[in-house]
Structure formats: C-alpha cells, structure tokens
Length: 90
Image 1 (cartoon, helix red, strand yellow):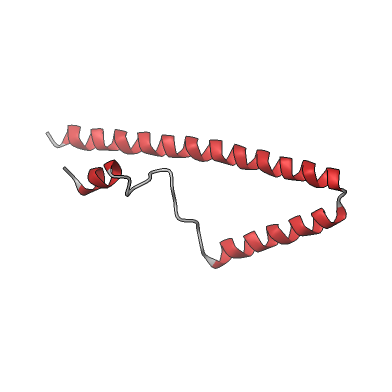
Image 2: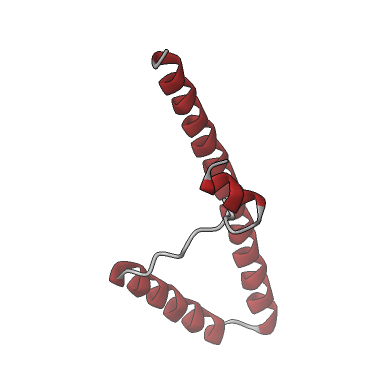
C-alpha cells in the first residue's frame, strides 16, 4: 500500500487542512484588516459591535463553504486526471 494511503488511514494526513500562507504580503493584509476592525469597533456602540461580529461570522461561514467546494472540485479533477493517465497507459 502506498505511503500516502497509510498516512491518510492513520490520520497523519488531513486533506482539509492547509498551512496558512505566511508571506510578507499576507501578513501585511492581515495586519491592515485587524487595524480597520479595531478602528470600527472603537467607533461603534455595543449593539453595532455585536452585529459586526455576526457579520464577520457570516463571512467566515461563507468562506468555509467556498473552500469545501474548491477542495471537492480539486479532488475530483485530480481523480479524473489519474483516470485519464491510467486509461492512456494501457
């Protein structure tokens, strides 16, 4: 059995997990987002802050749905490519 299948079976590989991007551009954008959030939160009432947090949670949920869909499409494409490779190698 291949190593990747063993790793997948024993939980050493989690296909849904990715290492976060840690380049300078990503860090700078994250810092700017946090700065803007702090600015607005300081200006808002408590009720507005709660609604803002709820909005942020909705964006997170939407992003999660998109990432699940992207993973599924990528996995299917990879499987289709492998089928095509094996079909041509006969």
